Length: 468
Ligand code: GUN
Ligand code: ZN
Image 1 (cartoon, protein in one colour):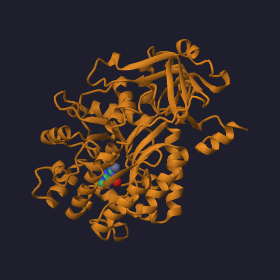
Image 2 (tube, protein in one colour):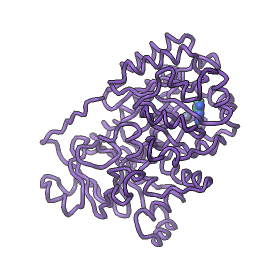
Image 3 (cartoon, protein in one colour):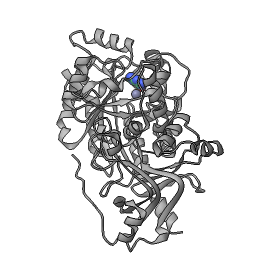
Image 4 (cartoon, protein in one colour):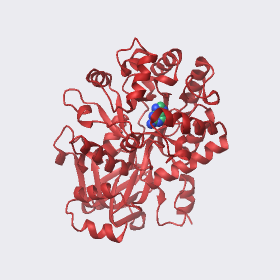
């Protein structure tokens, strides 16, 4: 694991954010939902050096911090302060082709995704896409994401460089893919691809808040040799908290293809298992069509799963069944993924409205308590980060988003007819209005402010801005 060192210096100034606060502290799929969160109608988060120092009701917390001056507190009326959202699976490199008319998964990959990703060999193109991607996710309240780059080192460097400018906690890595895709995108040699991945790992893993993932795209686009070497690389760095990130059991014809390529495997999960790719830092995207024995293996090895409902509907994959993942005797950690560009937006919040509808198609529902847990602390548990992000607690990293409870005249009026904060959140996740995010904080810095002339500011620019 990365050391959780605190750089808090008692002499650094305190700052604060005041308003309604909602934060989860445990799992409502296990514990009584009403015991799983803290809600402070007039709350205060106190921060220093990018970490939370104190949180609670303003009237209790403020007197404990005499040195916290009133002008160092950002106050939000008609808003809800929550931990930043966590996107457990996305592809920043697919930002240029999001919303492409297409077909089902495998044709969509060939027709749009692969030709698009070839453009990331050009570092300038990658820089530009990374810049655009971060602006989209920060304005949607996402502060951490588990992200696919693509084949080229340029695509990884561009992403982490932009993340460093904002100071976001991000996971990314080179995509390993050495068969069944266009030549220009294909790794030409399995051993060289792993050496390149390892050199990027050494460059980026643990540098500031950046973390690295070993990423075989999915079983069909890697030779057995590449999967073997990827498993060895992952295990070599397992004690340093390096991740493994891939796709699993997304669509029927994908699963059939995997079984024809790996006829000795007993199921799709078994392919990754065979090559040593399952473990506590392994994140599997989709998992729409999963057999019982696969769930058991995912549970036993500690893998996490990213539920990507918008993408699953857009590509006609199938439905993720959270009630199967959450069977009480073999629970699997689940977070929310946007899966840009299979999905149609960059918002974790919007995924929740889709997750509800996907569950309803199967005669289940997903209430807003469990939904917002999945979007925050559930994502952090899935990414094995729940000791530092995903909740607003003392010692945690100060990543927050401020949800606007008056994004429009109509929504303001509609929310009058819902009483509890979770009833209001259900309306918001279902109607998914525009202008929903008022501000986003990363390590205590307000990197996005919907009302500021410069909506987006890098960490270094904020220091300058605050001194003007
Ligand atoms: N499976 C392999 N690659 C991809 C991808 O880029 N998107 C999705 N949704 N599934 C995949
Ligand atoms: Zn994906």
